Image 1 (cartoon, helix red, strand yellow):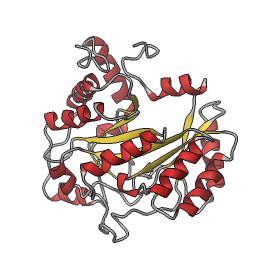
Image 2 (cartoon, helix red, strand yellow):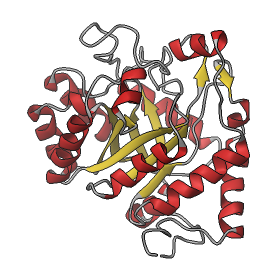
Image 3 (cartoon, helix red, strand yellow):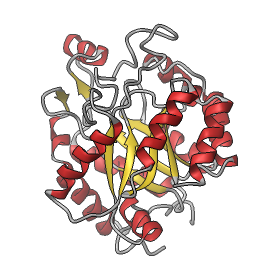
Length: 307
């Protein structure tokens, strides 16, 4: 595969192929909560989840969607001449509301002619039939991406992190989205407590058998004001060093189908909340190291799929 000089199918390459130009995401906060926080499943969220619900870089929820988009575009204009954007509902569970409210928020986002697509972060157990039907309708207007927070396929780890749903629920959600032609992106976290490298690779390989379109890989971030952070302070557990993480990411990519778009290879932990590992603050350095090592080792996405 020729991915414009890269050794994996990057999101940037995919977006340029699909839309004919560079596209930036604008992170939005739709004012949602989560069944892991409102008492339905729990009140403390997943053990690694910050008070921002994975939306620490999203805009101010006190603003309207339109105002958040305007703010996001102004920020991007300072570093790019991009003309089109993706409206990304990121904070908490963005399908966890009555369908009427979802319809209003999503349509407000995509009515802006500068918005090329809609991206929605959610949980597999928050996709009832009426929401799936709304997503199908919107996907005929502008492309819709749905991001599912799987994190791991291993039930023991899922219990530890308080994910709150079984793997079978994820399987059904992927199937339901695929049947409606909706682009599905999966989140996996590398370095969860108790997981071996082989366990993480099994999570990656599992996705090869499903109609998954994209993948976000993130190293586990230990943050202040989370249960994971409190656990780490009391009883520190091993976290990845840069070299070991780069090696792991490369192994994951080699195991992954080559048609799955890589939306992320490392995450952004808020600087003022991040306890460990602090080297993740230097995102460009991490990505450069992955690219350098893949070239040195003659590695590429799907290498072990084609051997």
